[in-house]
Length: 467
Image (cartoon, rainbow, N blue to C red; front, top):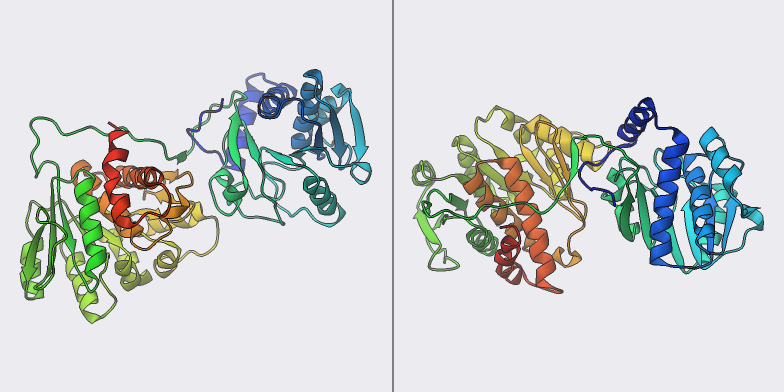
């Protein structure tokens, strides 16, 4: 069983393996560990299923020969289809130990189970031509498909598809989980994801988001020690109300909405302070008891919205910028945030990210980390593959959430959760981490086709699982 913990890039993985080799573990031994571990997963999940193992010329192909031999020894009918002769010493050794039948790709026929050991970590160019044609033919003829380390054609560090890649039923990571296991579009094709421990023990700045441990209030706490969240209302009151309710359900001791007269609060326990102009609002938001100001949910994009945003940014307090606030901020405004003394959290989806980020090349991790550095802010880059980055270079990758979260209003809920967690913790990165996990967990607990209000109702249940 592989510990999720740290996620290794292709370079990280090469370095970690070299450290093992320097300590006296041979490449042949590492290949044996990887192949036998993968074979155990395959045998347990589909025992005695006739299997075709597709082996490439490198060490991923060598893993395939070890897998094939191990399955053969377990009584499984196995054939190897080789794209070419092994090109590394370890792969040649694994091939020499294989006692079954090896066919050229052109001569191979599909089996019930297809195991892809063509290319794994470190692939930089697409699989193409006859090689891709045979891969697709043998894949299509199977009923169950397993990718070893990564599906052939996936870029390890970005999750980019270098060539057409079909979906798999199971992906077995070798040694460590890689960024592509959690980044779109590749992660959507992995099927079940498991990992084989080969002895790699390496740290990385990239970690997987895991269930947090959250401390409940003590008997000495009160509404202000648990945190006061201030939410600035704009043109669309519904989004503001969702963020406020989410903050209330996520542990905040006190939630206040600041709005023009006529705004109707979502609940009598959520206080609304009304203002008639910007100077009055400035005085209200200068309250020392306010722990964080959330602006953007339902803000709008007109001149008044810009005035409200500028006012909030002129007040030196922790801020959470979401939705319309990010569009209004733009690249120039985002670059000015680094001079702020208090923490900034931004929660952009892809479109909002494009409005504030200068870097457009590289993986989602690269782009999110660069924006966090440029702005001096914690960035939660939302999506099916959410990435959280701090200005210090720490990165969290979030496992896939419920696809039912793809509905209007759930982003406002996320902003409210994070604001509440920050109000109590005073730690922007930890607040984003806990907020993302609680949001995802609440989505799973809510079941299918839920509304934002139903999602909010399930936040305390998600929170309960962290206490």
